[in-house]
Image (cartoon, rainbow, N blue to C red):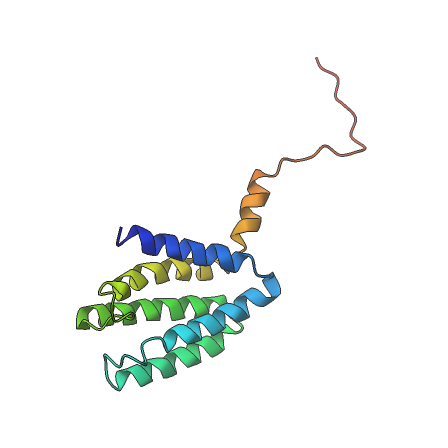
Length: 144
């Protein structure tokens, strides 16, 4: 369950973000990755490196305002930071020992979606299952 739940959370994030209009989705996700960069600041588990990482993530988030690739890079950087915190024993949620481990599983799911351009999954699914409608001016073909 420590692997399945984070995967489902990542998929739920992608699904929720798919509900945002295309014109706002990338910029909103750039803000989210910037916030993720500061998620560990209050714990201070890695000392001054927390400030350095937050600075890098602020830059990545800024670049992500115009690029899905940079947002994906940000989520992968955050994955690495999650792993470092898990190994150091300084989880993102202090009372949940494996929270950084879970975050390290969830974040690459989001990154893959970002590298794909952050498409609306709900629209892709709807288009996949939409049946083609016959054209109004189409004549029925005679059967042979």
